[in-house]
Amino acid sequence: MRIRHFALLLLWVVFLGFSGPWLISAPSTAAVLIGLMQAVVLLWLTHRWLFKPTSKDPA
Image 1: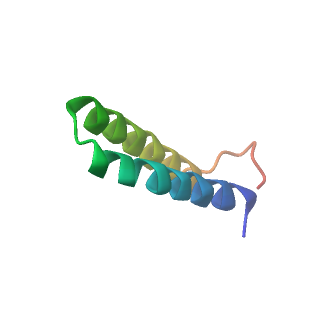
Image 2 (image 1 turned 60 degrees about the vertical axis):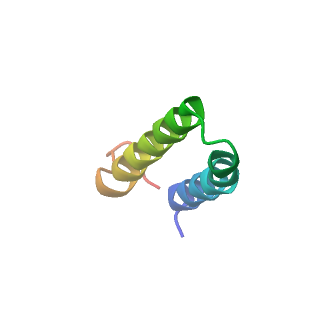
Image 3 (image 1 turned 120 degrees about the vertical axis):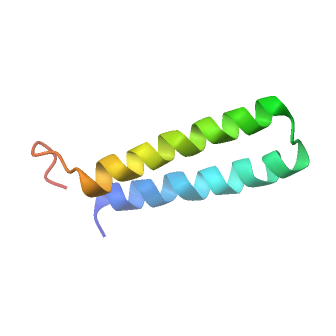
């Protein structure tokens, strides 16, 4: 497994592990907005790392 795939998997595990229960226990507007922002950033990173590899990054 490539290092960036492992890092991406780790980011998703951390996001789901911490944000999931937090959003369920405190469904306020701020919590929902923060969760959505984190999800958008992780989706962007997923798309960038998996589908648009840069020529400078050999991993």
